[in-house]
Amino acid sequence: MKKVVAVLLFLSFNLVAFGQTMPKDGDPALWAKALKIHKKAIVVDGHNDITTPLVDEDYDLRNTTVGKFHLGGDPFHTDVARLKAGGITGEFFAIYVSGTTMKTGGAMHRAVDMIDATYREVERNPDSFVSCITAAEIRTAKKHNKTCILMGIEGGYVIEDSLAALRVMYRLGVRYMTLTHNVATNWADAHRDEKHNGLTDFGKDVVREMNRLGMFIDISHVSAKVMRDVLDVSTAPVIASHSGARGVNDHTRNVPDDVLARMAKNGGVIMVNFYPSFLDARTNKEENERAAKLKPQLDALHEQYKDDQKGFDEAQRKLFAASPIYIAPYTRIVDHIDYIKKIAGIDHVGLGSDFDGVPMLPAGVSGAEDLPLVTYEMLKRGYSETDIRKVLGENLLRAMAQMESVAKIGTRKISGEGSLKRIK
Ligand SMILES: [Zn+2]
Image 1 (cartoon, protein in one colour):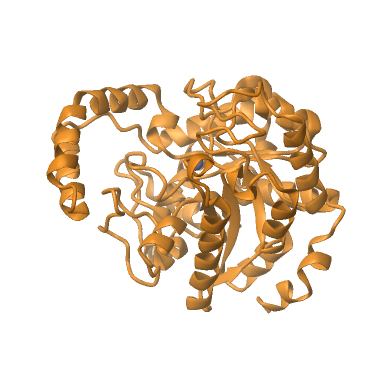
Image 2 (image 1 turned 45 degrees about the horizontal axis):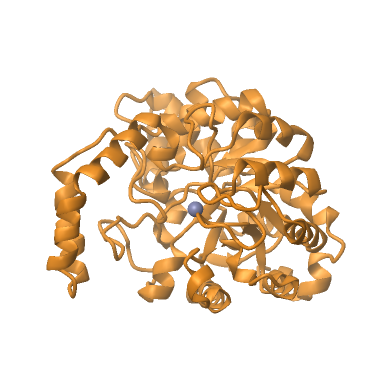
């Protein structure tokens, strides 16, 4: 009886602490164990696009984002409370810059706005957030019960073909760069835009300079040939900050088997994207079919609401809701983890949610608060606590420390001594 009371007390404590509920058909004892493991673990999420509304809408993450919608109509997934509820120790805010800047210019300016918004959000929330630039700082933040906000550039357009700009981005605290978004740069092909047959000579210089500085090369979004070229050149571990495995869903945003296999030697980490269309072929197909089917209505709505963004968002949501599609469940995330474990090994898989960068999340997941579901599913499938902790964050920390040790510049030398002091 005593034991039952203890378990119940423990359960209610954790349910309150994490603010989310057990899966419908879940096993309470296993759920309690999952929450315990999750709470203790260092959890690092490779990619979060909340930075865009921080800039465009001056969003304040102290306010709840539950039930709110981005411009464009997608639900919010991230705020201070939800990051805490998800047990997240390290969150990479994406310094996302669109490929359209290849035509319009302004990529570096946009990146500066995004970096500034990230720092301002940390300054607004000194009790919850801290800026981090090293693996060691993420470990320190865990001890202080704070969420590290890290930065990764999404879209190599930002450096405007300049290694000087790359170095300055490093000095501003950026610790990874996704070489492209969906459009090629002048030096690297994107998964949907191949014109250089991989990485150009300058692209290889970019990779070498990132190694020298101590910045992860992120192979999400690039073509498969660029992934291979990067692995040929890089002397440090690389990451895919938000991609799954093509072996589970053959999508160009996912990573092919031969690249997964090379991760073992490279020491890198594939951080699984939660977007159901990347996770699952059926969701992807039905989403594309719906977009094609509803195109005439969407075009008409664009015309009707051309001066009323909110009106358009609302109408679009209603239109989509009337044409529901199959949305893959959160367990599909763990199918990708299983697969990457099989091909690359348990030391080379992590989480890269893409929160606030995707129009929908897997069934069962509403936002950052639901990360313990992934821990629960891994536990259910027989993963050991050690292996679960690797996936949740330890793999990324190991790869990051290794990446830092390859660097010739030295993080502390270049950024001053203030970095550790900030979180003491
Ligand atoms: Zn992306």
